[in-house]
Image 1: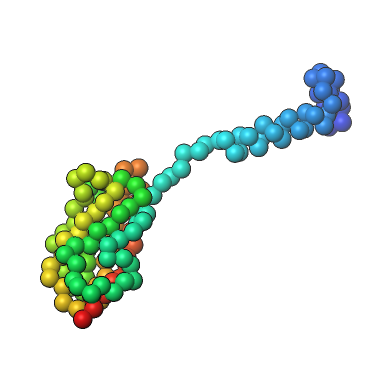
Image 2: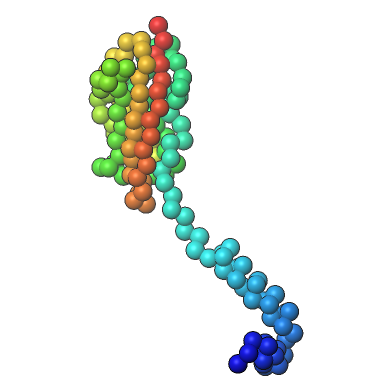
Length: 139
């Protein structure tokens, strides 16, 4: 059946002008696109750190604290801190017992210098993210 006849049949059967049918169809399609699957694939992103990324602190911190945007899986989340020579200066990372978005990284005594923090975490929605930043302990 040619397209013109099909359109005419639809118009007659539905009792609506073709332009109204097109508007309705477009509205339904747009609604489906806008309201369709809304489940976002969230990832745990670093929201802030102490000491802050790129900062210089006057005295050596006793730990690095990392705040994330999502709850973390303790068994699959880690962080380490290394000095300029690449030696680890942390004592392992642990997830906060009362706040699963917070990761603590206890540090050994730090002399003045630049330190790099590398983190890799798994959020409870099973997405892995990682990143790094540096901070400096001033003299």
